[in-house]
Image (cartoon, rainbow, N blue to C red):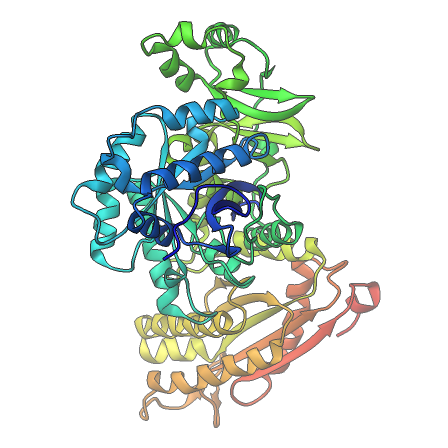
Length: 581
């Protein structure tokens, strides 16, 4: 076996950088430094690199050289983002390892310990206690820790829980294999729930396809890395615009129409330039006791945040004041604060805020307008708003079906109309339901209402899972709002599913079917009438006008025997449309 020679380009060990992107807003979160064989011009896996180095008797030397290269080549280019460096846990017992060596290299490169994440692989055959010893060694120096290579098994997850890393990187074996992989989605949801409980941040490795973005965001995964996001380069790369745009597009789609404006929650922000001495900041916190954090700016644009509680903890340490008091605040601020444009939906911002690292969960959020500071939002104000809106929606939910009621329905229709994009809306009404209630009692009638809601929801989810809405207007009236797509086919399947299932609610001895006036109706039974409005051009329409127009279609559907669908494609509303009938 050829021995790897320490060196750079053409000599042996080299380094490449792969971007880690935020799946919350498309911004750059950090870089992973990856070992690279300069002789073969091929990337190396960290586990393979360290195993090979150990077999050659060069583990300590190669590990040290790789760290030096990773730090030196990123100096001045990594900015305020995180730098993830794979390290070997096995060198922790090497007598040549002295605390502070990596810290000195970071200081020379202008980086801070909290910017660097040391990444360990969850290797099954590590000697007992090696990983724990390595984590303790580096954590006491202020480094953050990542555990990678977590297998889909109990032992691996138990080891992760005991190590309590700051970050956990999951491979593609944790990701759904396709758009209809229910087991994969459940697995992703399970590890996401575990991350929230154990308070670590998940990074999805192996993001190879654009379509994986949607399921990762839906699964609550905050960050991603992989060939679709960006491959390894000699210098830390920027996030490609196609990647950032796709992520922002998916977040807008996911929270399209969410209620609430940051303008309602934002409070005035107190700002300081980055060169302000820390002691001046501390005195300002004493003057402004009600303020939890200050925004650090450069040319009016936010570059950092300093929270009062974190400053006090820093200064209260032994030698804290002499060490930091005269330094500029830029040296101790959080250089990766959460920044949101004032147009960001509050629901979206709350999810983004709750996906942050545990030690940042309660930090204030900087609000911008046109890139400049417009205010800050406290987490308490954000959570209060979310709680209140959830309670409000719960008050409007139908107690029988749990579906949204009239106020959420009105909001959804206004949202669709305001967007100006084509959409379709179903109005559903049960036929002869009053007779059924009188014949069998309201308990059986309630069962029919629930069955109807389940049919609507299942078919709508099948055809339009991402951006659809099903509401319960009241009684035996329902509404479904969907993207334009193929609504007629969807309506036909709703009727087919309803007719297949409704027979189980009927008995041969049911007697004659009667209409609302009590008159017998021959050859009729409990059925469903659907009115479908396909709005190609929503301009000029209102929820009230749509409801009035659907009433004509429903009347036509009810005039037919059995379950029926009537539909019409709408252009922009006009006086001519208003007079049609």
